[in-house]
Length: 103
Image (cartoon, rainbow, N blue to C red; front, side, top):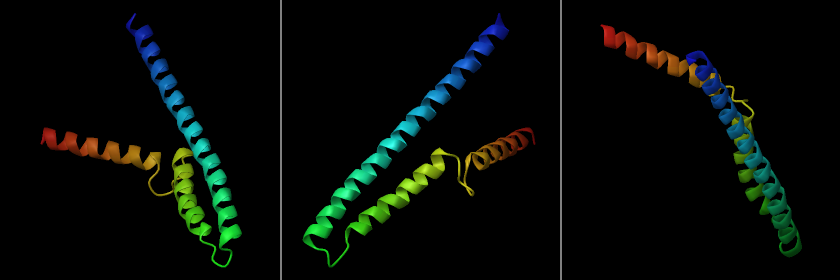
């Protein structure tokens, strides 16, 4: 009976993680759509009323950098501080704690 409950709990946790990931992807795509809509609108205003200075590029660039980092985190493309790095550091800290406890 205990084995069945463990399997159920593991399956439920996997489902919850997958559900959270899908919600994060949906949020990213909503952000991406808003990025294009808002920046096209700003570009129109900029080119219509003050084409001599392209100020809309500042908002497009700033928001674009944030969007890039969001995508890198979401799709696990973080060469420096990705999921693997987090897990390695967690294990390292837990091992250090265990060593200190038993010394």
